[in-house]
Length: 86
Image 1 (tube, rainbow, N blue to C red):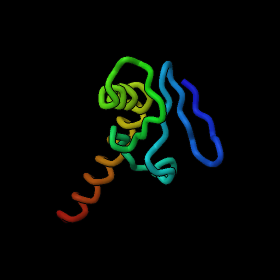
Image 2 (cartoon, rainbow, N blue to C red; image 1 turned 90 degrees about the vertical axis):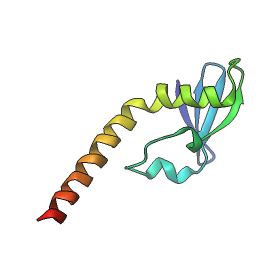
Image 3 (tube, helix red, strand yellow; image 1 turned 180 degrees about the vertical axis):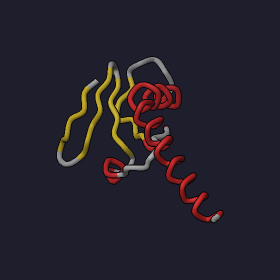
Image 4 (tube, rainbow, N blue to C red; image 1 turned 180 degrees about the horizontal axis):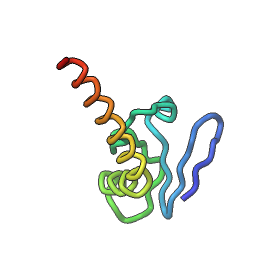
């Protein structure tokens, strides 16, 4: 798995496929949970459908980041909720 910056766009390369985010601004988002709709496939030679491949990409490339972001988002929301209760 490799990521390169080509002409200001980040392109991610895997075995038999490559993709980018649908919008480059997602690279700067700190609270984004990456989902299949955030991915634009540029090439798919894996034998999987595009939808299946996008799911695999999210699981393989972004699962750890997504979990960390989800925990941080939830912690922040819990704290905000507690402050509202007081």
